[in-house]
Image (tube, rainbow, N blue to C red; front, side, top):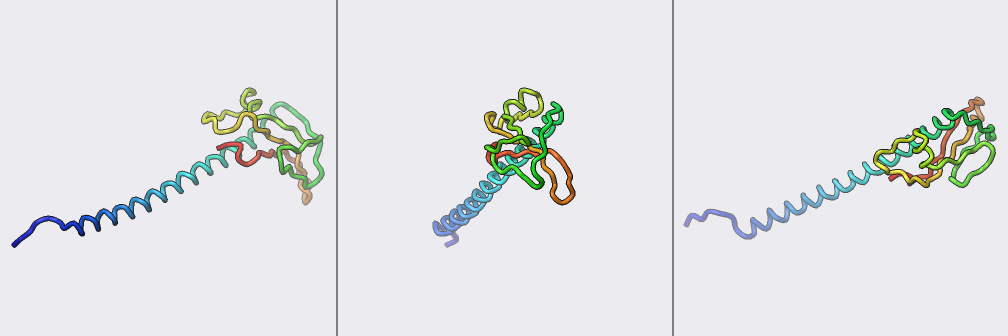
Length: 134
Protein backbone atom coordinates (compact mmCIF):
# COMPACT_ATOMS: atom_id res chain seq x y z
CA UNK A 1 0.00 0.00 0.00
CA UNK A 2 1.29 3.46 -0.90
CA UNK A 3 0.91 5.84 2.10
CA UNK A 4 1.32 9.56 1.78
CA UNK A 5 2.19 11.84 4.71
CA UNK A 6 4.46 11.87 7.72
CA UNK A 7 4.53 9.56 10.69
CA UNK A 8 4.08 10.85 14.22
CA UNK A 9 7.79 10.22 14.97
CA UNK A 10 8.87 12.31 11.99
CA UNK A 11 6.62 15.20 13.03
CA UNK A 12 7.92 15.07 16.61
CA UNK A 13 11.50 15.07 15.31
CA UNK A 14 10.87 18.20 13.25
CA UNK A 15 9.23 19.92 16.24
CA UNK A 16 12.17 19.09 18.51
CA UNK A 17 14.71 20.39 15.97
CA UNK A 18 12.73 23.60 15.50
CA UNK A 19 12.48 24.04 19.28
CA UNK A 20 16.25 23.72 19.69
CA UNK A 21 16.90 26.21 16.88
CA UNK A 22 14.43 28.72 18.31
CA UNK A 23 15.95 28.40 21.78
CA UNK A 24 19.44 29.08 20.42
CA UNK A 25 18.15 32.08 18.44
CA UNK A 26 16.31 33.45 21.49
CA UNK A 27 19.36 33.23 23.76
CA UNK A 28 21.55 34.88 21.12
CA UNK A 29 19.04 37.69 20.63
CA UNK A 30 18.81 38.29 24.38
CA UNK A 31 22.60 38.53 24.69
CA UNK A 32 22.73 40.92 21.73
CA UNK A 33 20.07 43.18 23.25
CA UNK A 34 21.84 43.22 26.62
CA UNK A 35 25.19 44.13 25.02
CA UNK A 36 23.52 46.88 23.00
CA UNK A 37 21.98 48.41 26.12
CA UNK A 38 25.30 48.30 27.97
CA UNK A 39 27.10 49.93 25.02
CA UNK A 40 24.43 52.64 24.83
CA UNK A 41 24.91 53.38 28.54
CA UNK A 42 28.71 53.62 28.09
CA UNK A 43 28.28 56.00 25.16
CA UNK A 44 25.83 58.18 27.16
CA UNK A 45 28.25 58.29 30.11
CA UNK A 46 31.12 59.29 27.79
CA UNK A 47 28.91 62.03 26.33
CA UNK A 48 28.10 63.14 29.86
CA UNK A 49 31.83 63.40 30.71
CA UNK A 50 32.53 65.42 27.56
CA UNK A 51 29.54 67.65 28.25
CA UNK A 52 30.69 68.32 31.82
CA UNK A 53 34.12 69.42 30.59
CA UNK A 54 32.46 71.66 28.00
CA UNK A 55 30.26 73.12 30.75
CA UNK A 56 33.27 74.10 32.89
CA UNK A 57 35.06 75.64 29.90
CA UNK A 58 31.93 77.34 28.56
CA UNK A 59 31.03 78.87 31.91
CA UNK A 60 34.67 79.94 32.51
CA UNK A 61 34.85 78.06 35.79
CA UNK A 62 38.43 77.88 37.05
CA UNK A 63 39.57 75.02 39.24
CA UNK A 64 42.83 74.73 41.13
CA UNK A 65 45.32 72.17 39.82
CA UNK A 66 45.02 68.75 41.38
CA UNK A 67 48.23 67.05 42.49
CA UNK A 68 50.03 65.50 39.51
CA UNK A 69 48.50 62.19 38.56
CA UNK A 70 45.47 62.56 40.84
CA UNK A 71 42.26 61.04 39.42
CA UNK A 72 38.76 61.13 40.85
CA UNK A 73 37.46 57.63 41.61
CA UNK A 74 34.10 58.28 43.26
CA UNK A 75 31.31 60.85 43.22
CA UNK A 76 31.99 61.79 46.86
CA UNK A 77 35.40 63.37 46.14
CA UNK A 78 35.58 67.01 47.21
CA UNK A 79 38.27 69.66 47.18
CA UNK A 80 39.62 72.78 45.49
CA UNK A 81 40.47 71.09 42.22
CA UNK A 82 37.09 69.38 41.85
CA UNK A 83 33.56 70.52 41.10
CA UNK A 84 30.37 68.47 41.49
CA UNK A 85 27.58 69.17 39.02
CA UNK A 86 24.22 67.41 38.80
CA UNK A 87 23.09 65.97 35.48
CA UNK A 88 19.92 68.08 35.79
CA UNK A 89 22.06 71.23 35.96
CA UNK A 90 23.85 70.27 32.75
CA UNK A 91 20.46 69.71 31.11
CA UNK A 92 18.89 72.99 32.25
CA UNK A 93 21.97 74.97 31.23
CA UNK A 94 21.62 73.52 27.74
CA UNK A 95 24.89 71.57 27.69
CA UNK A 96 23.49 68.04 27.89
CA UNK A 97 20.62 66.95 25.69
CA UNK A 98 19.66 63.42 26.74
CA UNK A 99 16.60 62.80 24.57
CA UNK A 100 16.19 59.21 25.71
CA UNK A 101 16.22 60.28 29.40
CA UNK A 102 18.50 57.35 30.16
CA UNK A 103 20.68 59.28 32.63
CA UNK A 104 19.74 59.91 36.26
CA UNK A 105 19.04 63.64 36.71
CA UNK A 106 20.17 63.51 40.36
CA UNK A 107 23.51 61.87 39.60
CA UNK A 108 26.71 63.82 40.23
CA UNK A 109 29.38 64.46 37.67
CA UNK A 110 32.74 65.37 39.19
CA UNK A 111 34.89 67.65 37.01
CA UNK A 112 38.51 67.99 37.99
CA UNK A 113 41.76 69.42 36.76
CA UNK A 114 44.13 66.58 35.88
CA UNK A 115 47.88 67.15 35.61
CA UNK A 116 49.83 64.45 33.79
CA UNK A 117 52.80 63.48 35.99
CA UNK A 118 54.96 62.56 32.98
CA UNK A 119 54.70 65.65 30.79
CA UNK A 120 52.86 68.19 32.96
CA UNK A 121 49.92 68.41 30.54
CA UNK A 122 47.05 70.18 32.32
CA UNK A 123 43.47 69.31 31.30
CA UNK A 124 39.95 69.05 32.61
CA UNK A 125 38.48 65.59 33.11
CA UNK A 126 35.17 64.32 34.44
CA UNK A 127 34.15 61.35 36.52
CA UNK A 128 30.73 59.74 36.09
CA UNK A 129 29.73 56.85 38.32
CA UNK A 130 29.16 53.67 36.33
CA UNK A 131 25.44 53.01 36.01
CA UNK A 132 24.47 56.69 35.88
CA UNK A 133 22.96 56.06 32.46
CA UNK A 134 21.08 52.92 31.50
